[in-house]
Image (cartoon, rainbow, N blue to C red; front, side, top):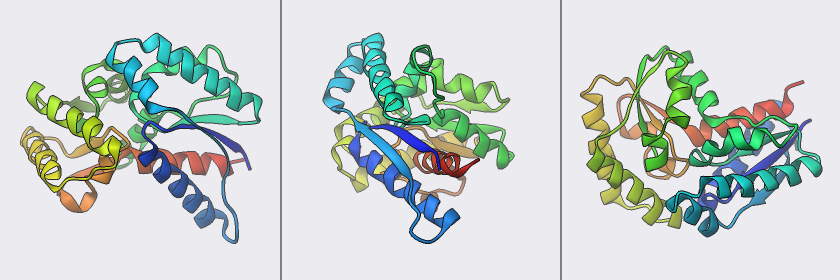
Length: 230
């Protein structure tokens, strides 16, 4: 069995889900008392968020790179970053480590293609929605991706940082998300990417009638299967 190097804590609420899903998936596949061999480095999200909000991405990349090096030195066979937004730093990180990073967007694209869906909506932090580091992974695969309008981007982002990352799950916020998804459904999307690992705390497949791609579940299961793959 391979050893995972997880970088979590962004936020810890979703990292908790990663740990559970990874171990459940390993047990489902191997049975018995099997669980995942895992090294977890959980950051102080307050520090990382300050680098995000002040546009110090190189600084945040340096922090995550040093963590990845420590995990590699400790015996990790590959890295899983338990957040969508910080995959912006992956190209920087890959220059300094010798083990692969299992990319959350690439895992999600595989699921979208398996469903034969050609047009999706992307929800996430403002960085994930507006910048290209995530969307380009989807577009390169031949899938059209659209994002909400400026006002809705602010609503989505504020709920993530002011509520979900603090463990607050509010019904009124769920209603706001569902209204935004409905608008985008009217633009012809056949699926919606929950491109922030906390959004799954608020929205699930039972809430909408188009395909939901919960990146937390997709990524965690992909990580687990990579653990047991020869």
